[in-house]
Image 1 (cartoon, one colour):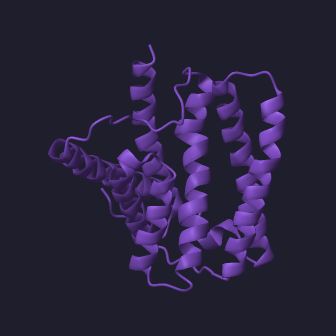
Image 2 (tube, helix red, strand yellow):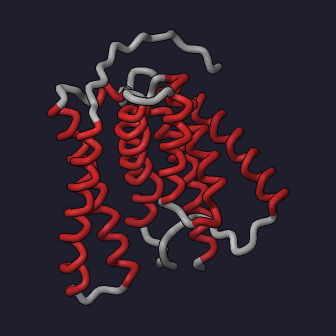
Image 3 (cartoon, one colour):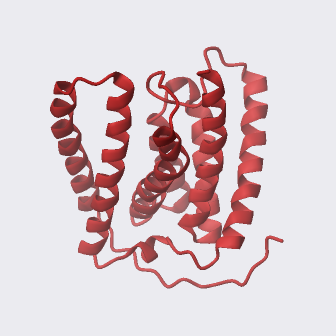
Length: 223
């Protein structure tokens, strides 16, 4: 079921360290610029977090596209293509099952205290916009950022194994410390799939599966 016609993608990787500097700088300026207007608005914390998520996704998508364009690259060059969706979906589902089993085993062995799932910064009211971000928009933009942009940039200077561990550690650091190990394993697994399939779509699918389960658990926890 997992076999499909092998397609050799001809891609270009012109990313440089300066692109990372620009990315961090622009992201920082964006978040600082966004902070004050959101503080002025009379909104509850859930609304502020949700607005921040959506604006960040839009800004980051545009920023990565800009950085690629400047380097005469396109989304195709970071393997964002939809020509092998069925195979990508099958491999993504298998990878999701394996990673879930590994993390379930680790949780049973380590018995972490105060374990929360999913990993949101505050307790938020479950809503359709939140569900849409968790299950679709978040996975797409985060995979573009970490696998598509950052991982490919690291591979210009480091070997794939080191790049995988480094990027996965950075990805995990954006989550609570108590779930660092589980997110690290999850990210390493997704990157291995990305390398095997040469497909960012496969990585997005795994992320979507994971976050869909997270959204179901979260909806149950806030009832």
